[in-house]
Image (tube, rainbow, N blue to C red):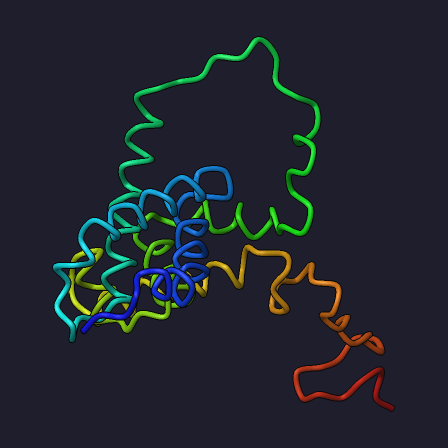
Length: 184
C-alpha cells in the first residue's frame, strides 16, 4: 500500500526542487517542480508499492525540466530594455557564482551532479535517467566536481577563495639542492 501522496510531497519535495534548480536555474525551477508533482499525482495510484519513489520523482523532474527548456526555446520574450539590477526579492541568499559555475558545465555533468549529489540517487539510477552506464555517470560527476573546484570561487580549493591560506613567502633564491642564499 502506497503512503498518502501528501506525505510523498513533504518527504521528497525539497529534494526535487533542488534538482530542478540545479538543472534549470532558479527562475524556471518552481514551474518544473509543480509540473513534476502534478504528473506524479496522476500516476501515483498505479505506482507499484515496492517502487523507488525518489528515483521515480527525479525521473519525472528530469523530463519536466527538459520540457521547460524546450518550451523556453520556442517562446522568446522580447523586452524593450534590460534591467540594471535584479528584480526585487530576487537573489538574496542565492549563490549566483555557484549557479554560473554549474551552468558552465556540460549538460550531462550538470545533470549527473544534480541527480546524485542533490537528488541523492545512486549512480545506477542516475545512469538510467541520463543514459549510459553507472561508471560513465560516476566519471561525469568526478569531472564536473573537478571543474567546479577549479572554477567556482566559493570552493575552498579555488585560488580566489578567502579562506585559502596565502602561499609562504620565499627567503631568497635557492639552488637545486635546497640551500638558501649564497654559499661561502
